[in-house]
Length: 249
Image (cartoon, rainbow, N blue to C red; front, side, top):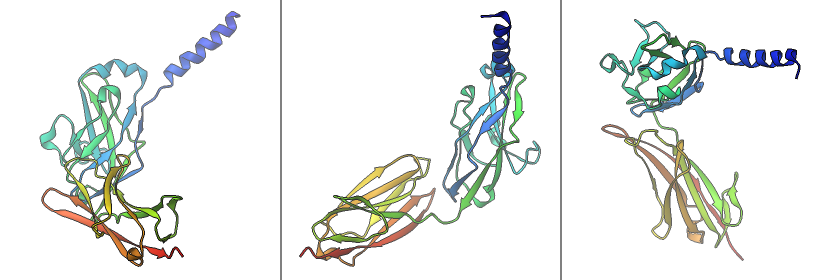
């Protein structure tokens, strides 16, 4: 390899190292139910000249609706007594993970949030280019009910089944990110039907109702209620599904 080619490759690699800039990864918005907690997935990047500072003592700060220390700071991972919002950074800041949970969200917490990283060294940066919009709902979202047939799988935009068909009704609702905010499901089903709770992922929970369709189920209005446990009360939302059972003649 010629010396000129080596120099070009070295220069390109060197430029790649120096091009690492301050950046942050945040969702554009997150939605929370009043009284529950909210999870903010968060990761950040720093200029490579500050890499050594990640081994120092780290502080994560959140600002709301601006980045002024005096007026907009609402959370500091070290000076928790002065925080306007209760929470914790559950990510490892040393690994550039700023994932955060805020607890007992209220309407006044709605707004746009900016993250800042500080160390005992030279690293101090506010990520003003990106933010997350926290939207607080007063009432929970109504759960969704989906019909599954044993021989067809998920059935779209249809509520008819033939008598004798094994069917499942699956009720799904957004799952609260905090274990203390329990989500429970209730059905107005008949005794012979079987119910099964499941968690598809961290975002949604569901309850599955399994039964063999008979003429007794024709026209039945199956209602699923999703109930969230708050600190000292509950909030519920419900949805219904009417099944039409066709005669197997």
